[in-house]
Image 1 (cartoon, rainbow, N blue to C red):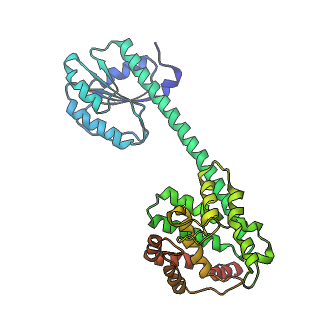
Image 2: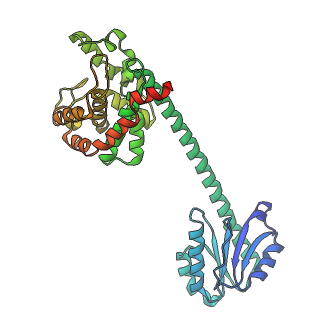
Image 3: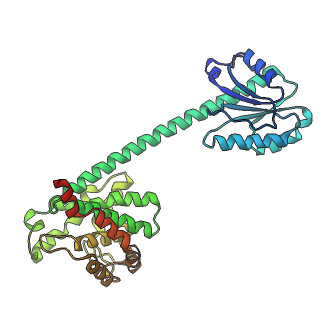
Length: 353
């Protein structure tokens, strides 16, 4: 019963005073990559590449072999390494402890060749199957990551496309989405949710592509009828994004619909009140208003960051969730740093050099 051709590539690490005998036996069955360590008390340097199987011939020195198990797992923490222990009948009391420490199988000494080789082959088969599963997992993670990157790129382009209609550089999207993500982190959202929020909030105004330029770019106060039309950008945006199976776009849909709702119920389009407004909508509202106040618009000049800070504090309990306003105050320096990093004038100056 020779080893399958594939298993000839298997690297087997043997820790045993009988290492040469094991090496000869395994060699006779076709195994070629065998490393032996004869003195179990010497902690020699382990090979750079992870062994596919560890064989421990305990020789009544189980305590020393627990050290080897710890070393092998510490040295290759991300690998599944099957461990087989070999011992005599008198060593069986160690078996349960060995299994608890990670040993997968037990070979009775003196060796019954067929039995021993079958156990070694089966252990290597499990190792190979585990490697195949891990490889498939990595490939799936890579595909998922690439798909997510593609979604993010699409979201960024869509957000910029909407913003370029009423903003020269599109940096409003960049800033407000970072403000929103920053506030989300301060609110205790997990890192992955903050990343999704960063991407999704950039589509908050995607519905503006359905608003006529005569209203969107008007330099002055809107009439009541024009304001009614402007408010529909929330509904338009949600309709553009609705129906997606992706979490990123689902969040974007929620944000597009709810980022103009107000804490006291006076917002639009559905006059939601308090925590009826999804948290992502509440967070985006603050990020959006802060950037709108501190940016030039066709109808106004930019406010200072301190003026905008005071205005948002005034809106606590009416426009905004008071708890989130408190977080806004706590993270204000970080928000100002984001604004400075993505300053319209600075970027325009650099681009013109």
